[in-house]
View 1 (cartoon, rainbow, N blue to C red):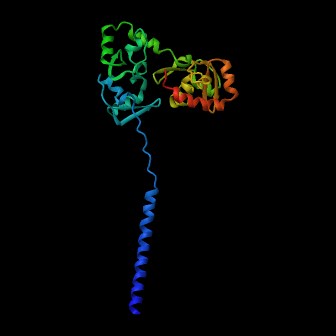
View 2: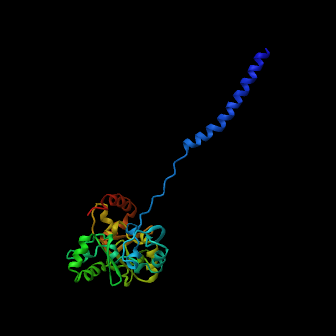
View 3: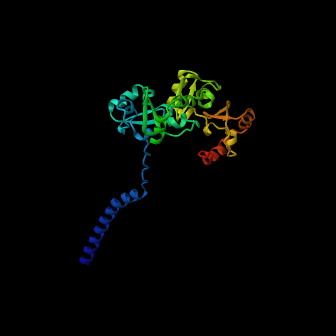
Length: 276
């Protein structure tokens, strides 16, 4: 009997110990199994492929910037070769940004006015201003026949988006108002005009907030997957977002049922956004 009692007591102790170990181990295993993997924050790509825009002017070289020296301007991220370059940019961003919104000077200033993105490694500094070219071939073409190219490129590029209407006034003032040509911002390779300095600063801080939806095309036509140019005089603001229309009739149709139209428009826009 004593042997049986001794054996039973030992079994009981072992059972208790196993239970304690399980209580310690399995909860942590359960937490490890149910824990959701953390989503990595997407890495932002710097503008100009990370090349230091200040180096164009200061050293006449295309130098890669360092993420340790970065600044944000008009929603774009810029890297700089050193601290001094960053400070120079922060003091006067527009002086150090490529002209024409970074478009190829030769393509835009040529006979067809093509909007081709410039290569940040192919550039020229002309009269203290930075101009990019889409390739070495484009740069050579300019050097062979430079007359009138830069002047024409600047003229073409200077034509403002939204026919010169101020994008901030739609939301801030609920009015379609022409901006002043001297109060401007270059954003996403295009020029925008503003009615006053306050509007310009508001846009510079949050461009996406003020840009019309659906690429500034007629919002009422997007649901039919049609990209019709809008007349900047006709607009509606819904939930703090601007929608433009090709005429008053389209605007009235949109205003009669904006909610469903916006939902359908977003679905259609996702499919035709990149189409010509």
